[in-house]
Every structure is written in C-alpha cells, then in structure tokens.
Image (cartoon, rainbow, N blue to C red; front, side):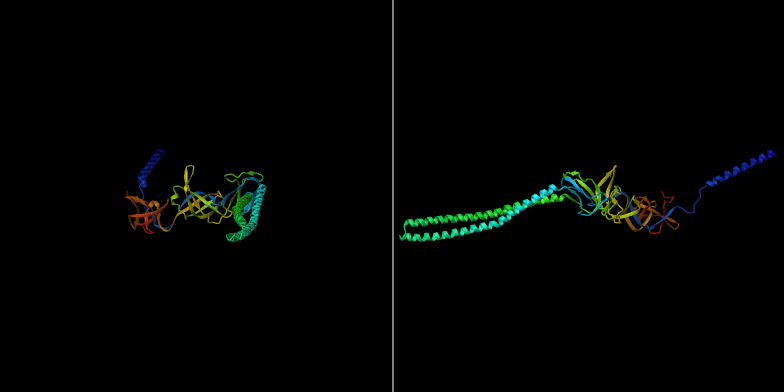
Length: 407
C-alpha cells in the first residue's frame, strides 16, 4: 500500500513539473498595451520665467550717514542713544565751545573797530575836503586880485606914475599869491587822494575782518552737531568727555539710517545676469518674516562684479514697493526671485517632446491613426517646458518620444 502511494506521489510531481515547464514561456512573452506611446497635448499657457538669487536689505544711497565732528575738542554733550529717532537738523551732540566763543567775540570787536574808523573817515573826510576847497577859493581870489593890481601897475610904470620900488612890491605879492594858490591846489588834491585811499583801505580791512568773523562763526557752529537727515540712530561711537581730533576724515559720532528709504541688493550669478534687465519685477522674503513677500522692480545693475569665495555675482538693485515700515532692517538676508520673462497665451510643450534632427527642431504629431514628423520653431524654454512659435496649434497631440522605427 505504501509502495503504491509513493508511485502516485511521484507521478503527481512529474505532471506538475511538466505543466510549469509548458506555462513559463507563455508568461514571459511581452504584452501589448492598449494605451500606446506616451503623448502630450499642445497647450496655451501664461509663461513666467524666473531666476533665484540671494540678497541683502540695504539703505538707499544717501539714506545712511556717518555723522562726525569738523573741529577738534572735547565732547561736551551727547543727546542721543542707539535706536533713538531723530529729525533733520536736530542737535545730537555738542563740543566744548568756550575758546570758540572767545575767538568769535574778538573777531566781532575787530569788525566793529574797522566799521567805526570807516564811519569816521566818511564823516571827516568830506569836511576836510570842503575846508581845502574853501582855502583854494580864497587863494584863487587873492591871486586874481594881485594879478589885476600888477597889470595896472605895469601901465602906471610905463607912464612913470609909480616908482620901480612900488612895481617890484606888487610883482613880489603876485608871485607869493600864485605860490600860495598852487599850495592850496596840492592840499586839496592830497585831501581827495587820502579820502579815496582811506576808503579803499578800510573797506578792504572791513572785508578781511568780516571774513575772519565769518570763519569764527562757522567754527562755532561746528560745535553743535546736527542730524543731516531724519532717521534712526544705528550706532554711537563716542562718549561724553572724550576728545576728538578732526583730521582728514571726520571722526564719527553716530550713524543715522532712514529706515523708510531701503532697497534690496540682489547678487545674481554671472550665468543669469545676461537675462536681468532694468524694470523687471522681483520679489523676496526674509527669515524674520518667512510668510511675507516684498515686491519691487530692478532699478539698476552694477557693472562691477562682486567676487566672494571665487563665485562671481553682480549686484542688482531692486526697489521695495511693498509697505515695509517697521518690518525690514539693513543687512537682513533675503531669498530673491526675479521675473526675467513673462509671456501670456504661449503655446508650450514638455521640453522632451522636441528633438533635434538634421539641424531642425522636430516633433512627432499624431493625427488619428497616423504619426507624422513636423518641424517647429521654438522660443523660450526652461527645465520642463518649451515655447512653440510655429509648426503646431493648440490642442494637437505629439509623442513624447520618437516612434520605435525612427532612428
């Protein structure tokens, strides 16, 4: 019985192995799929092409100012601290000014003295000239009188009506009167010259002393340090009681930043910089406010490269049009996106559907049961899509890979 059972089991094993041997080749044979090759449909889309960059929030040109001293001296008063809001023209510090005030008072006295001398000359000069003019008129009248007397005595002498001694006396009087007249002329001329020259000299001296006073007043004004713009105090580097020495570069007291005049400096890789143009839109986010986007436009592209760790980038300035008061701060790092292309109603295909053959871009279009190759003109493309400028229409279906009989 056991022997019979063993033969039955052996027969079953042989039958099973035979069945498996016959069925296995049939299972390995390839199946034809109902779906056929993968396809894509030409679609009409709005295309936005962007590039990514890193950046920093920075003050605009002129929005950050280092305020320093223009004269040497001891810092007497410091009226601001870091974080204080200041207005344009506000006094933020003062340097000791006793010496400056004394110098200014001395210069004011010099100006007053010259002005007094000038006023005295203007008052006394014309009086002296009038006196010399009166003296000249008197000498002229006497000269004319003696001239007439001498002429008369000449006639009387010819008629022997007077003696030679009388004529000699008249002639001597005439010479004396003429000499006195000439002296009076020279005195009047000298008085006029002295008056004119005195006016010129005192006017020049007045200008000199006034300039010296103005210089002293300017230096005195430097003792009070004013905020050149409205903003927030970003740093304070000098304390009360410290002595500062004004040299070629003015020592900095404080740094003031106008937080309402910020911009974004985006550092664009040299590979992408050729596609960035002034006027393109951009947006960015900062780590402090990860859920908020700030929008703006490219306003400038610096031609000078920025090289860090052998990486070449270019600084692109982006305006910040989104209200940001109280949110952004200088030196905040940002993740930047710049929209370098923005086209509406563009025909697009997956980039893999377009192949290059014999110098042309080709796709395989399916029309019903037929497959035909079509030359297309392409435009913009990114990693996934390509723009179709001509050769296809919206809704047409193309193969993502060439037919198997195309080599």
